[in-house]
Length: 171
Length: 211
Ligand SMILES: [Zn+2]
Image (cartoon, rainbow over all chains, first blue to last red; front, side):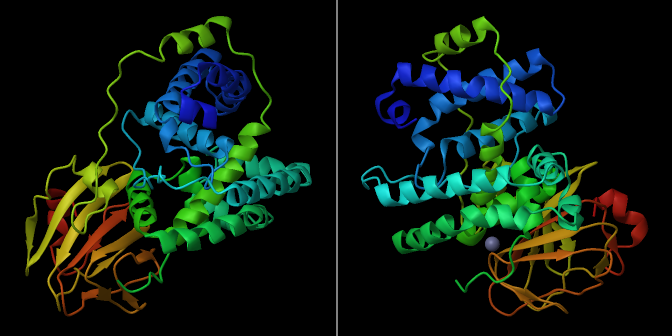
């Protein structure tokens, strides 16, 4: 992804496509879209990744998290035919060197997060997947007992908390 | 600016991340996240979980021409969606809802003004302008209401709400927010149901004023 962002590397983008397009298609079809509808969204998402690559900040997000958000936004825009409100973007400061330690820490936490997900009971994992596929309202999420949302999320929360403190120092 | 003390509940951030939050509330969440680093970090944590689930999703082979079609479009001209920046107390998402135009306040009486940003079956979102010492019209709720302070502050039975704070109220809360002394209070208020105003505007007029 960094090769796409920094060098506009088409071969790297093609590799990114090979990895994510089939997963995105599967992911979108799970929300009930047909194969063809899903491919239309996949196409839009992949083009957005290329066009907005400079917004990708490896200190704050794994590629999969960034793409998840783009895909959810796109699916909602298609469904509603109007833009979904999105937060003001934090501009990644180009002159600041990448902080390898922070990027590594986020990678580590993502690995732990995936392990935590894989250790869930089947029914719990299904519930989590439902929530992140947008099939649960916030009331359902907050009243669903046994939804290990907090546990799962806390695996990754720590690194972002740390980053947040650094961001505060920057502003 | 004093520290933000009233944040977005976690379940709401998760619902926003997954795209299952009514549009008026999504506007409040996006606006709050624009000014609150805590909730931005929490939201990004949810996005990380969503990303992990995306990674773990069973792949479905894309049709062969999809890749060719995407690669062929990389250089195609496209018009990026306009990006709206914060203007004074109004964060980017509110400016986007206003399509970049300055707010056109409509008087409700007693110095209170509003701009309706959206109103449909999902509920409504509005900006409210309340002079110091003035009550936000006393209202009960049919559904859920979120109020984000953008300028000044207000206080009610629950506590004090300053810039960036979000008050969330449901049927069980019958409160009377009053704008504090100082700057006029500007809030972004969203609800998933029409508000019932007790005193300020006769109930029969509500559909007319879309309150
Ligand atoms: Zn917050």
